[in-house]
Image (tube, rainbow, N blue to C red; front, side, top):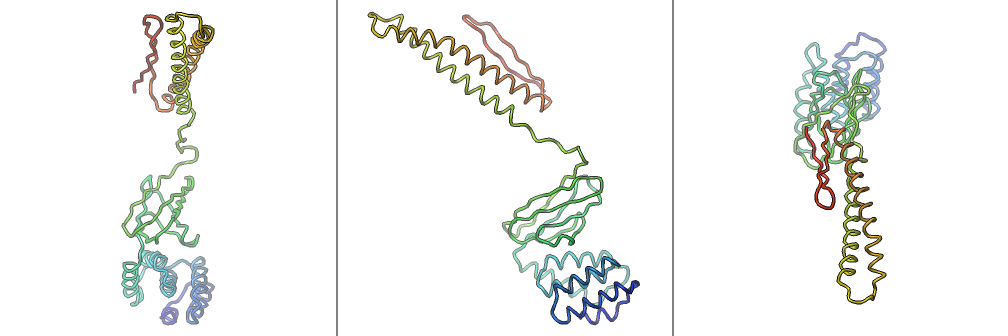
Length: 283
């Protein structure tokens, strides 16, 4: 079949024609990997539907149906005249093999919509690219889809295929410097640390309370010194821990709110013997 296609096709570029003929000769001898490289080299000189058809046909000989599908789709896209009569049979063969193989149909879109991007997949060769909106078939495993477009940063999208269920992927592209920064873990860490410090303050306050109760209810001087130390050190320690913990919680919350466009509201209400810390927010 390859020989018939080559004989019926005339290239406008002699160099492309010569390299393409070399690919046909390689394929006729069962050297399909080398034939594919030759067809690709010819296509880099003169891109046309015939080269893509030949690449797709050679990939079917290697039983790499996903790659064959990509180049056959390109063959149809580039066709400016009637394709060889064997192309419909190739369409049917590839579709049948993809149904019989455990692969997932993956349709890939790009945002912003309409961006002229090129897509590639880690399981394909780097020069085997396709355009957004193309449906490809991926085997089970981990794949990385790379999207490149002029004026945008390259984007890498990881996808894990576990079964043959179809998937829809949307890859968001960003202009240089426009990518949103990930939230800092510092505010959350400060709030958690502050809460833990307040909890430690509550423990110290409890120790102080035990010392105060023992001192108030004691009938002898036994262990009086120990209870006095519990009360003497427990009170300032608990107050210091409360203050530090509250400060960390407030500071962490303010940082978190500023990164989420929230307006924090912090207030202190006096109560008998101290104050009540009130933290709120509004969007």
